Image: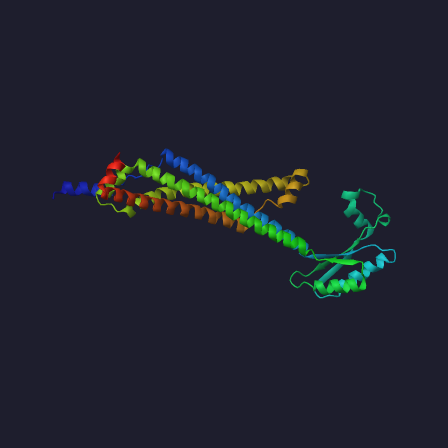
Length: 326
């Protein structure tokens, strides 16, 4: 073997191999757009679920920090004395911190949205309230407190807000279930899209795949080339979708903070809480991005391996080969 032949072979060996799948094909661009949309929806769902859960936890924490004692008016009852006795009785239990008796002015302000301003509490049989703050880590015995109040002040009723807390917890769990279902549907749709895109890429480059397979290239080698192609697309698409979702939350948070005390902002805050997500939400977006990239890559690999196996089975059966070629 002369030096010229060896030099030529070295040049061929050092020459970069062209990609099996074109990087700038129409299918690749369409798949990239689909992955951007799917990634955006998935990350938006993750962030929204985290935001709603944080809001529900905040509401539940605020509610569970206080209990309320309601005392119904009675002609034979000295209301001011009963309020003071109820407060002192509640504070005698371990787990309570402070007690506040809502005066007539505060009670009137609570009823103002429904009964209007300038309300005279003495003219209506309106219950009076005592607000007791409790230790969330070591709450008092509500059943014993309720029995003691009933014995001493029959007109008193203890509201520990358990019903509202249970409803908020149920709402948070329902939100997680709905978000998980939406996320599963997004992932399922993305897998189907990748399968169709991979089969389309294989069909468009079938002659190249057949030649490589004929000269001895293993299925894993061909699958690895497709895997690299789809991994690059999925990383670009998932990164773009994640940035769009994070940017949407940042923009919503900026709008909420810049429009404080406006009717739109107040209504949005009352319904959804703060449009901000903590580090766990951004961590969920990052993990979702990685899951989308991994899912796309594995789906492409398995689709290529299965398609090549189908080609081998068709080639091994002459009758099926004639039908396949037709």
